Image (cartoon, rainbow, N blue to C red):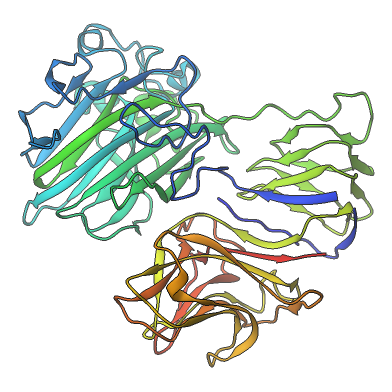
Length: 546
């Protein structure tokens, strides 16, 4: 996740002289709702790609003129074309299949093994064309819901084949992204058919009825901690049908659930489903009538990083140019940074007591702010540059935006007495905000106390000047001033005007998997009392300029 734990450890000496420290996103350029992507390209339908297509990778795009003529696509029920070119499905239980090869090849090619160990080693279930690392995209419009239905959801999924009782259900493995009709999202793991494990549900969106919405489910492998590969799963939504995509749910399986041993030899019962499967499925449950368009599946680059590269230039005790650290390293002698170095997610770079890491002039130390962490356990980080700020908090996971108005006048990041932020000096607050309706008046950004009073004002903004797209806004103290964060501070925004139709909206990180600073700092808002959300944070950057 996109969070930075900057000052972690016991006693820390920080000498800021000349160089820079950066905290990068775990998913660079792909976090924004504006649809900016890693390769900045669109697909054949003009839809933004979140991840680039793998060079020479497998792709499938729906034939919008005549889907039934496609040998790789099987809707399984009759579909009819709407006047606008989209297609209509009127069945309550739907499984539309997309084959990695084609339907005939799938039906005539045997699957030699269902051993989870062997599938992992092979990387696929049936053929090398199986869908493994993929981005599934589709637009749907829910017209009618089955009354009393127990599931009521759209589900995109892959990494398996037919879901039936043959072969003890072992062809029916899958990892699934679920979009419930009430707006909630969830990740589902089906180790075999039928053996499910579920992530928590997240309320990511308003109810779906009577509107178009874009839905992406993305799955890719990265090096794991408990297993050789872990499975990253992401749900993205285009909630306003305008090709602006928002990451609303992410989940990493590095050992989750159970059931792998049901199908024979397995590395562990909770092992990830890391292999490809011959079928990707567009599923709906309890939708009596829905429209769909622009379905696609693309094989994507899986973002694995090269192994550690500690001495490429023959100079001992340095971390070399363009080095990517993807496993834990403890410095055992003084080191200096002779080039740009990245601490990848899942890795820890530790500077123990008595050791020093020197960042030389013009070089960058980047901590990928998910589970990648820089720990200074009594050691010294010496930065030879004054050009960059110190980042005390960087939670830039783009989640949902929530309204601020007279009835809910403060949204803030609460700082508990055990928070790592206590005692940090800051002079700049960056938040992501927009407006809804036609609000007027002034919002305050700063530090507030339990009684809603301003402890330190960092800035104000005329809310009528805000746009309707969530945008970063920076608020800074006058040059030379700093604020030392205190226990029970509430850092955020206050707006006492407007109402539920005319408001300011502030972006939150709603991913519970990796909250910033655990439960020591978390999102809260005030209605008639303070309401805590201990597994969520505000989208917020707190920094201290030299």
